[in-house]
Image 1 (cartoon, one colour):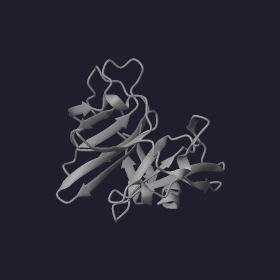
Image 2 (cartoon, one colour; image 1 turned 45 degrees about the vertical axis):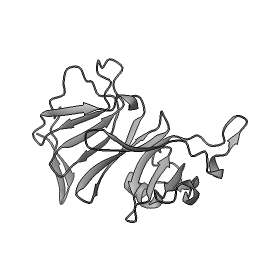
Image 3 (cartoon, rainbow, N blue to C red; image 1 turned 135 degrees about the vertical axis):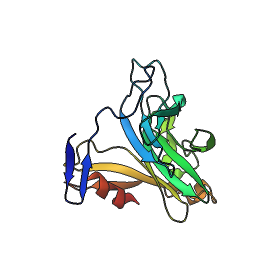
Image 4 (tube, rainbow, N blue to C red; image 1 turned 180 degrees about the vertical axis):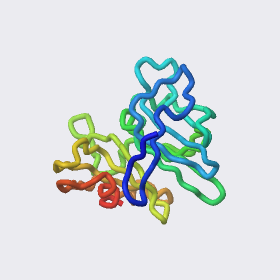
Length: 199
């Protein structure tokens, strides 16, 4: 099996890992994470020929299929973050097609969903529509519990690209939301640098 990476960060690449059911075919796989039990969560947009529309596929450590869920995110599944909160773990997902950021249990039950922030002046309606396109693509949680996400992607990180960063304080509602701050991506930045920039 091929080995990729350099120095302390070398990894064995196992192609076609995971026993994917024949009814599921991956679309774009924008998010992958691992829980404390070693389960691997893969968030994908769903291939057009897939019989099953579930966007979240879960495997055990050895690649055996455990479950799938999330058909409501088909076509827009993007950012994915797993967070430990007390004795539980939760998944935070972005769906750019449907314009939401949602918190879910590991089995897909909804805790809450944040949609279009109509209360924010940064997203005031203009000519019967939003003044700014609302397509959340990645999410992170601050130590104090603030939920942060970006709208937009940088397909070519070697060029200057503007994305929009937002945050939400669960205890305060949209009044405390720092919305629509533009983040300019400097030439040559990596995806990791993008994360550091908007956190």
